[in-house]
Image (tube, rainbow, N blue to C red):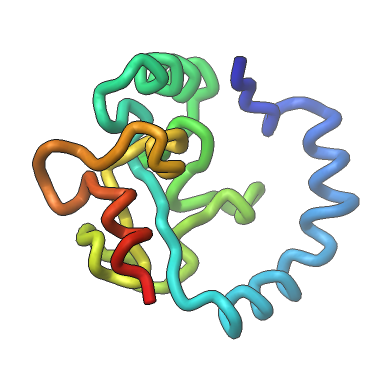
Length: 131
């Protein structure tokens, strides 16, 4: 089962000690080296059984939309590491380097293939067209 732990004391302590201390450095490294990313923005995704689970988890955890059921697409002030946005001009087309797809977190692994309609529902095609 997936749990959104961002409100737990352990997560906040772990995040404060290990993640946030190096966040700015990690972002600088990321911006220099990463030339593409796939981010989902629909907890329901490609209409699979896992979509129902992730939609439920997103609702129970009060995750802000858009999110992929696990990661908040826009991040927030307290947990900026959850952000896919990163000011990298995400586009809703699988041929773009930074692809903002209407898929959930599991769909992004290609375990469910591409969606049947819409260029914003093709995670496997995004991997195929990456340079």
